[in-house]
Amino acid sequence: MQMRKPLRWPLGCLPEQLAGRTVQGVRRRGKYLLLDLDQGLLLVHLGMSGSLSYAPQGRALPPPGIHDHFELVTTLGTLRLNDPRRFGAVIFTDSEDTAVARKLLGRLGMEPLSDDFDLSAFHGGLKRRSAPIKQVLLAGDLVVGVGNIYASEALFRAGIRPTLRASKLSLPRAARLREAVRTVLARAVEQGGSTLRDFSSADGQAGHFQLEAMVYGRAGQPCKVCGTAVKNIRQGQRSTFFCSKCQKM
Image (cartoon, rainbow, N blue to C red):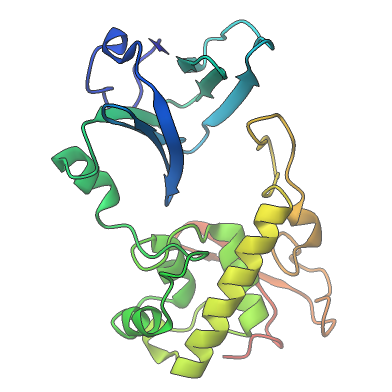
């Protein structure tokens, strides 16, 4: 393992202390990638601009650049973190039960594509929030993984206005939104994510979900369902796209 310029938080140990350890599995929790080691755990976060590249054994990555801050070299290949802004993080901890792991992972919401995304818990969480529903989806403490693009798309699919107070959603509408979130995210995974600027997968492939977006990035263009011009507003310094006719409430 190699660390170059420091990232947002310290690694938590000397890099050479991880030499010889075995990666036993890779998981995800919210925006954190969890690498289970035979002794301990690595938490990886991409921050705002980070990206991971992977080269299997026998295929070399390009020489490290000034924004390549972390490399994990294994017998099966090399994983590299590139992060121009250095808002990302690579943190070693003994387990998920440590204070640092609980601080980073403990307040994350339900995983939307898992069986843990319970309708009663989702609706109950919405009823306790007075913020606009799109802001609640983005917050990540009720449900994780619903980024700006996918929040706009899920709300369109569910027919819900993004400015509606979350506590106003009835159980049937919460059920529609839950299903829309799952459908949109599952489709995004199939399409390899969304590439608006420079996003690519670990093997260098661009995502294609944005090509089939119903409202996101389509301000002023006709809604694909009713023909009404798609609107764009700002919510919490983020762009929100919606159809005023298809999303009346």
